[in-house]
Length: 354
Image (cartoon, rainbow, N blue to C red; front, side, top):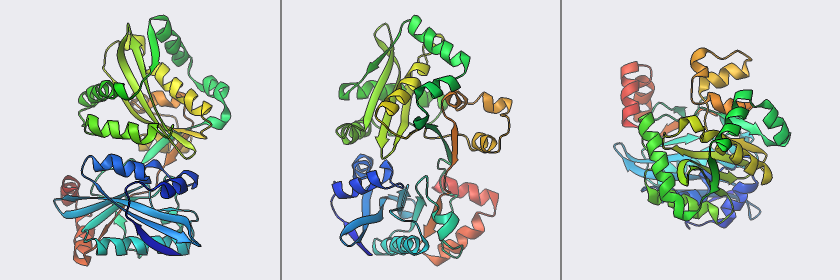
């Protein structure tokens, strides 16, 4: 197996491999690299080949921070086969890339279905638990192979009532396009303001790049709930491989009594089912809720009041995602980090630095 640097921004062969690989996700695609370039990230893509066929690799996004040049591998490496030999080849290629490009550190989280750490990478590898920056730790899937009838039956009676009321009270669902990106960004920003977070993507321009990068492939869909011709809520779905993702949502906060978000969610799931995706991914789920569901435990009152609870109407597959890891090129930095993460005040400072 050989590893080589893919220099071009657009890489159809790499993207095609990801689409057909069980571990391939949109965050590793060259289309996603173009999106992140708007925010100043530079891609480094290492491709593995065997008998002139792409069999794996990883895309690292790099940006200069307080600690110097830092890399981020989201949902990678992606390998056609995960076994000990391939996993260690991928990690050695990662270490080599870090050295060659003068990176101080790299953060990585394997693909959602990966068992790289669990099965193949020994504990002696200098990949340390990530305490630099928070990442999504669990998610909720809808198994679309059950069919829409089964999904509808699983919905709570109140949810079915709210969807019916939304239509009766004047909510209309409309498909959006490129001209609506600004409207969706404003709805998303309004949601972030209520939740005291920042929009991600951080600009309308970056959001437009996502649309242009994925809609041309039939993998992006933008829908709005409108009342009296005015957009109240929106949902941006991305499809890649066998999974459609509820990527971003936005809501003005108005007309709560009209339940504008419920019909949007059902519409997105129905679209994913029509497009013959196997799964619909809500993109995140509180880890404590995921753990309770997997253990068959009832949810607490606090968990039932969370934003994630409404998605349990539709999703039935909680997933604990692979843990993220961090690698420091400098052995002294690794030693200091190992000490710091054991001391809560220092661990908190590390998160602020990240």
